[in-house]
Image 1 (cartoon, each protein chain N blue to C red):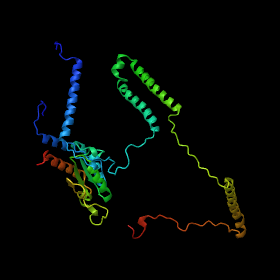
Image 2: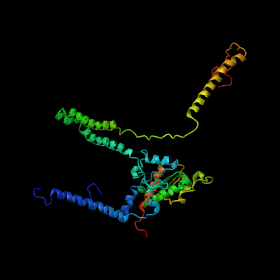
Image 3: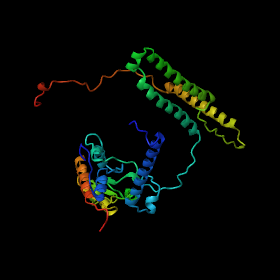
Image 4: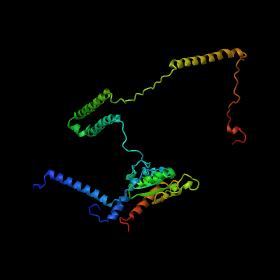
Length: 155
Length: 203
């Protein structure tokens, strides 16, 4: 639609994908030091609100869960439950080495889950220890690209 | 625009109402149609920040908070009335029209606030702001040993300690050799500061 007014013809599929990717609401959930970078991303310096990313206090309102930090076995149970309580369509961003593969705890960390993808399906991985907020913004843009390619009817 | 409208003013509102209901209904229907619906017991469980929900959400709540909530509501509503007042108070154009406006609005708001404060004073005087504390009952037992016995023992103990201290004070000087005149020792280490340039090998 331009300044003179008019109409836009689109497919329902594209409209829905556009609506979904323009308002990716993450769950306010941080488990370790990566969460500090995640908070930095939400704050005014990086202002991720311009991408429609706005942290939600409840899993019922969230579209994406950012696993920001070391996933211990104690926390894994909670993460699984939180993920289950999110409504579909739901996405997961694994942020940082710890949640990607266990990070510095990959060998001797008896208490660390070796990658959050062992408990929930991960859509986007962000490498870094911790990743900078720019990297996480990159992950959100990647997720937007992924959502853009979705189809309403699975063939 | 001189034509007589077919729809009365109420009719227009009726059309607005119908449009509103239809639009909201359509949105709800569309979301029902398009949104995925995959309920499972885990998803339907209460959200407790990832913790396993235990017990029921219906817990007894102390009724004492009810009064606090009511009084809060009183002053909350007062705030709502003060906001529109703040927009017209000291309005330059209104004061220009009648210079009594500023004073009048100020007095008016003070009168309004004081009526509410009167309510607060009433609540205060009635004692509704007092937090009702539980009155614990001190348990009593029938013991053959009277309480006065403990007190007697305590007094006796305190007296014994006093004697011990005073005895020490008296006895020790007798046993000891008369003390030498106290010599004030000079500190063994005397701090002195040298300039770095004077020290050999220190640059």
